[in-house]
Length: 258
Ligand SMILES: C[S@@+](CC[C@H](N)C(=O)[O-])C[C@H]1O[C@@H](n2cnc3c(N)ncnc32)[C@H](O)[C@@H]1O
Image: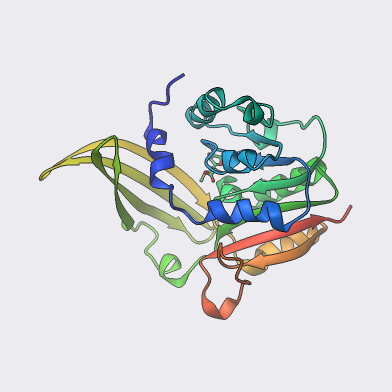
C-alpha cells in the first residue's frame, strides 16, 4: 500500500499543530470508555490516543490517508493493534456496530461537509452513534474579518511554510482560491514544492472545499439537534471562547442529552 499524493507530507507538515495535545488531554479531562474518530486521516491524533491505552476506531474516506494510518497500525505493537479499528469509509456510509461514549472530529472535519444541510445531517447521524450522555468533541475555524473581506475570486496565499523531510527542504503554500460568502464555502488549494538552492519544483496540489460556520449558527444548530453544550473553547489551550478576543477556533464539547 503506497500513498502517492500530497498526503505523504501530511504528518510532517502538521507535526507541531497544538490540537494533538488538546485531544490527548481531552481523554484525561472528560469521562469515556471507547472512542470513535470521524475523519481520522493518517492517524495523526488517533495513535496518540491509542498509545495512552484507549480503544479507538477511526473512519477515513480518503484512501491514501487511510493507507498511511493502516501502515502505522501494521508496524505497531500488539497492544496498539488491539486498541485500534480503522475503516476506509465516510460518515454517510458508516454504520457503527455499537454506541460510543465519545466521538471526536479533530481538525475541521465538520467543514468538509459541503453545505449547511450536510453538516446538520452529519451532527444528527453522530448522535445515533453516541451512548446517552456520550460526548462529541470537534473544532472548526472561527471566521475572521480578514478572511471574509477577501474578493470572491481572490487567489490569496494565506500561509507559506517550509519544512524538512528525508533531509530535503519542502515548501507548502496554502492558497485561498475563492470565497463564496452566501454559502460560506472556501475553495482552497495546498501546493507542495521541493526546493534546492534557487530552483523549485512543483510536486503536488491538493484541492478541497471547506464550509465555515459562525459561532451563533453553530450554537443554534447543536441546540436544535438536542445536544447540551458542555464547553466552547477558542484555543487548543482550553481557553474559553470569548467573542471579543477574536479566537481562531470554535472548539465544542457537546453531550448527547438522549
Ligand atoms: C483536515 S483532515 C483531518 C484529519 C485528522 N482528523 C487529523 O486531525 O489529522 C479532514 C479529514 O476529514 C475527512 N473527511 C472528509 N469528508 C468526510 C466524511 N464525509 N466522512 C468522514 N470523514 C471525512 C477527510 O478525508 C480528511 O482526512
